[in-house]
Each structure stands twice: as C-alpha cells, then as structure tokens.
Image (tube, rainbow, N blue to C red; front, side):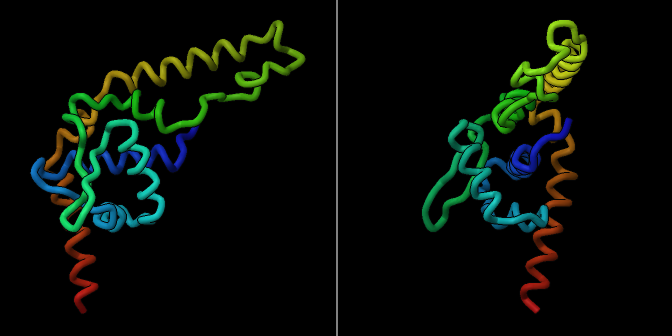
Amino acid sequence: MRLTQFSDYSLRVLMYLAATPKDELCSIQQIADAYGISKNHLMKVTHQLGKWGFVETIRGRNGGLRLAKDPKEINIGTVVRHTEEDFHVVECFDSGMCVLADICRLRGVLGKALQAFFEVLDQYTLADLTENRSNLQTLLMKVNNMDEKVADK
C-alpha cells in the first residue's frame, strides 16, 4: 500500500505548522521552499486542510497559515482518512467482481491488514510526530534561510 502525494504533503504541511511557534503565521511559499515542493500543489493541500478544520488560513497582507487545533487534537489516522480517496488495496475491495469472490480468503486478510494499519495511525497525533519540535524548527528554518541567502546573491 502506498499513500498518495496529497497525503504526504498534507502531513508535511501539518508538521511544518506544528514546528512553527504558535504566534507566527507561515506562508505556503515558506513551506514549499522548506520541502522543495511545488507551491501550486501546496495551495490545493492547504485549501483542503482548511476545509477539514486542520489549518486556519488568514487572508490579507499579513496573512498566512497556522494550525486550527492543538497538535494533540490532530489524529494522524483521521488526517489520512481525509486525504486518501479510497483504500481498495485490491480490485475486489471495490467491485467484488472476481471468480474467487465466494471462497477467497485474500480479501479478508487484506482487510485485516488495512485495519491494523489504521489502528497504528490512530494511536498517534501530530504532537507525537513533532515531539522533536525544536529540531524540526531548526532544520526547516535553516533550509528557508539558505534559500533566502541564495536569492539575495
């Protein structure tokens, strides 16, 4: 099983925001630069995260992004359930159109594996992923500062 790029970027945005001091707003450009990913992709990601209530977006000249909730209230399993379109590991999860459908045990085994996957994710919050907040902040800000120095030259 593989998570989509959308889920990956969503989790990275949330981690970036959780590593940022609470009184600071972040720009999409800062996050894109820190991770070396497309600003356009992140605009879509942050828009959805805002609609789902994970991120607060502040418009205007001094606007930006911040977490809409405390990191302890953002469950990783919940985020992944929002960001993934389906969890049909194999075709029969979706259609049931298989000659083995009536007797196959694979579907049940894969269903249990998927359930175990979410049981693990459900045990963690954004706070758990960012316990090393100061290290994350240092690393992410260092990348942004290096980009600014290159742009100044």
